[in-house]
Image (cartoon, rainbow, N blue to C red):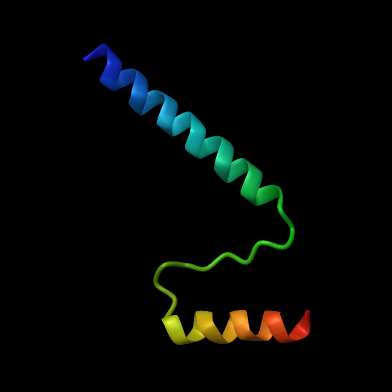
Length: 51
C-alpha cells in the first residue's frame, strides 16, 4: 500500500514538472482535446508552411 501511494505521488510530481517545462516552451502549440481533428491538421499545416 505504501509503495502504491509513493508511485502515485511521484507520478503526479513528474507530471507537474513536465507541464511546467512544456508551458515554458514558446513554440509549443496547444490543442484542446475537443478540437476537431481537421482543425488541428489545418493548424499544423499552416505552422509548417510558415516555417
